[in-house]
Length: 166
Length: 299
Image (cartoon, rainbow over all chains, first blue to last red; front, top):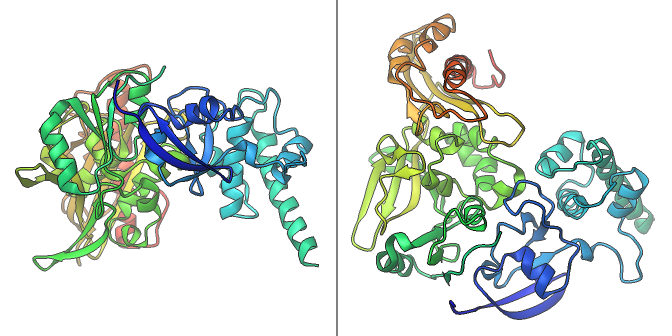
């Protein structure tokens, strides 16, 4: 068996110092080694987007990156969204409010793709959402509610920001 | 499925990467963006014994203009992300075809990791970026431990997923000559779904002289043969043309002599039809852009 590789990686704010097999995908490291099963694996070939997480502020397919590549990186998964007391993130609230999910399998990828988009573009238009999430497949919703959810999330976050400032 | 076991190396110097390639040859694979390689490893379509991750090699992320024998050249190093290229002001100014073709590759999260050079080295006969490089008269900069060489894009692609790279060589950069004045370009494609590989695509670069006639032209196609190809017959027919009327006629020969790979996405005949239609469309748009640089839609 090839030598294991040392990976120092921050996941959802927690630092880990791990030895991994080189072939360990980031998705498997998250799910199997760190017990963060919120990241879903659909196709394992980069097509479905369900496994999308944020690596160093960029939405990334966790099935197409080896954990070994990420020594020194910072990763955020869907588990980072809700507060410790269970209060949902505005993006999660918006998906609930606008019926942006049904079975929920694609939702972690949708949420993290939306999260990265809203950090870059706080109040995205329809095209911005389609560009950011066009590679995330959903077999339930027909997408319209997802687009609406992301735009609603942007508005909720902007409102909360202005309340904080007031 | 999961990848087969492999040794992982993350060299910190180019020489170290080249030493590893010299040692392991075709048992090794170079990992840049990994958006094709890791997918193929997951499916065990490839199972390299050694993966050489070049992302920590300094200098390979070069993106910029440099002068060479009095002309300007745009260079993109082996770890420049497709997304970086697509959003780069220099790419937009000096090689807009690369930006336009790049924006049609897969989806934003894939382009955020995938590299321009990786797509060129992978040599998918349907892919956008090799075809754009061909239309731009690009050069492929190749290194091995023993030597350094420059290969014209015309000579680099040899077949489906095949290039003229030797097992101990890697692509370190691609160079694109900066577009001269009054040049327009266009990349158009047909895909089954947004973000899919095109069934067929056409890239055109058209220069217009002071007399309003086409003074230089290059046309390249993807999905029309076993590799990205140029279409010299169309180029010859377009040279000297003074308006879009000539382009449809010229494009009629775009598929002559081509050997498209049929698949469930398109038969050989359908691909030949697309080659003609998309060539005409790319020529019209490129010509319109050359005549008026702000033109952005199909003429």
